[in-house]
Every structure is written in structure tokens, then in C-alpha cells.
Length: 145
Image (tube, rainbow, N blue to C red; front, side, top):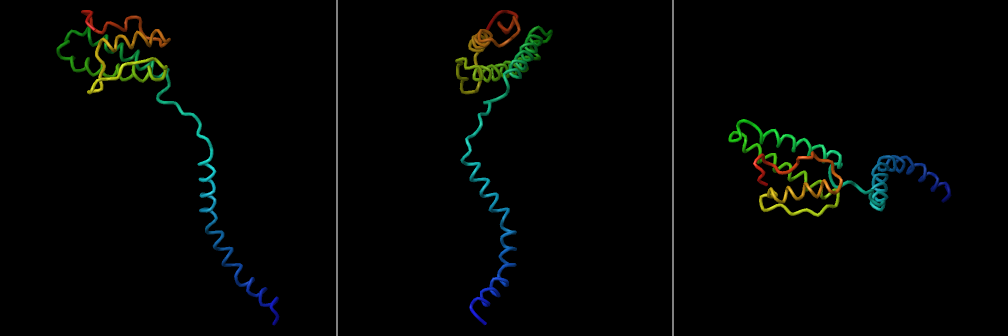
């Protein structure tokens, strides 16, 4: 038996296990290659938050709810709801201001805007082109902000 014959026999014996190992590990190699390519691909820009149309619709709905609660016959019973709606209006107004690039005040330690800040922010949002109800401010029927 020559060296050539011995190498052919070794190749015939070694080929099936090498093919099996390559087939078993191919998905992992492919995944690693795909991850490497994905790491080098530039990320597509993603929006910061909700679409501005959704923010505007939420603000209009919350302002309408606030108006209904303030003219309610039982203001003492729904004072907590009015406060919660005002907090939600403030949160959505800050998100809309961020989306539109309108300067806005930072909420205080509790995460709330004062009524004066909220009124000014809603006015600035309307001036920036956000469609809000004509009577968004003042918040209460007695005119206090």
C-alpha cells in the first residue's frame, strides 16, 4: 500500500464525520455571521414616542374630559379625578412638546406641572400647530389656572 492509497482511505473514513459536524454547526456559524453583519449595519431612525397624531388626539380627549369634570354637579366628589386628568394632560403635553421641539418646563419632583406651566405649555403647543380645543385654558370654570 502506497502513501497515496493510505491518504485516500483516511479521507474516505474522515469525510462523513466532518460533513456531519459541519452540518450540525452550520446554523450557529450562520447566526454568528448574521449577527456580525447586523452589528455593522447602521440603525434606522426610530421615533421617540407615540405619533404626534395620537398625542394630539389624547390631549383633546383629556381636555374634553377635564371640561366635563369641572362643570360636574359634584365637584367635591370628582376632585381626585380632575387632579388625575390634569396630571395626564401634563404628561401628554410634555410628550407632544418633545415631539414638536417646543421648549417645555421640567415637571417638579412629583412629576407634575403646575397649572400655570400647563396653561403656558398648551398655548405654546397650539402656537406650534397642534390642534387643540379653542377653550383649552383656563382649566377651571372660575378662571383660576
